Image 1 (cartoon, one colour):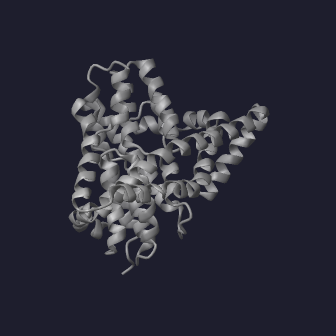
Image 2: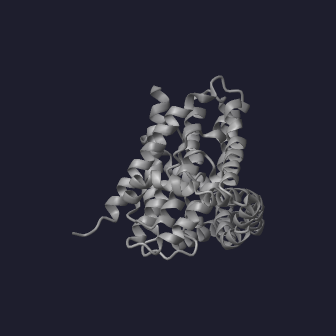
Image 3: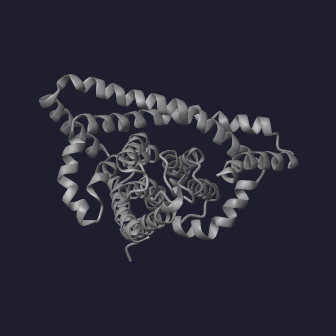
Length: 170
Length: 184
C-alpha cells in the first residue's frame, strides 16, 4: 500500500502549489476555511451526543441482544450468517462500535473465514445511517423525516444480502 | 428520528430498570463522553479538510470539478444552483475516495444550500441516501484491520464490497426517485 500513502501528500502539495500559481493567498485561505470547523461542530455536537447515547443504551440494556435473537431467522433467510447479526444491528448507530465488533469477529473466526469476509463486506458497504441522518438532517426541516432513513436501511440490508452471497461465490 | 429516539430510549430504560438500574446513568455518560471525544477528534479533521477545501475553492479547482460532474449531479438532484452542486460534487468524490473528513462538512453545506431548491425535500433525501450507500473505491479501514489480523489476502473483499455498495446505491436512489416522483 505504499503508493496509496503517497496520494494525500501529493494531493495537498499539488493543490497548494496550483493555488499559489493562481495567486491565491494559501495561508489566509486555509485559515478562513478552517475557521468554520468549530462552529460546524458546535451545531453538530448535540445531535451526535443524542445518537451515541442511544447507541450506548441500545447495547447496555440488552436490547441489541434481544433484537438479534428475534431477527436471526429473518437474517438467515437473507443469507446473512447469524454470527454477523450483531454487526448488522450496531452498524447504523456507531462506526467505532462496529469496528470493535469487526475486530472481534476476525479474532474469533480468523480473518480469512467466510464469516470474516461477510463481516468485512458488511462493514465496508454499510453506513452509520442513524449517525449520518443525525448530522445531515440536524436543523433541517423535513416533511417526512423517516422516509429517507427507511429507504437507506432497506437498501443497506439488500446490499448486505448481496454481499454475503458474493462472498460465497467469488 | 424523534419517534425512534423515544421508542429505543424507553425500551432500553425499561429493560435496564428491570435488570440493572445502576447501569443506566453510566451508559448515558459513556455515550455522551464518546460524543465529546469524537467531536474533539473531528474538530482536528474538519479544520484540515475545510482549510484544504477553501484553498482548492479559491484556486477554482472545485468549480472545475463541479462542472465536470454537473451532467450527473444536476439531473440526480434536480437543481441548477452552482454552489449546491459544487458541495455535492465534493461530497460525492470525497466519499468515493474514502476521505470522510472532507465529505461531511461539504454534505452539510449542500444540505443547507439545497433548501433553496425547488424540490428540496427530494434533493435532500437523495443526497442522504446516496451518502448511506457507502460506495468507496478502497475500503481502507477494513483493509488495514484485516491485514493487521493476518489475513492471507486482505484485498479479496474489495470486489464484493464494491458491488454490494453499488447495489445499495442503485436500490436507494431508485426507491428515493420512486417515493418522491412528481405527481402527474
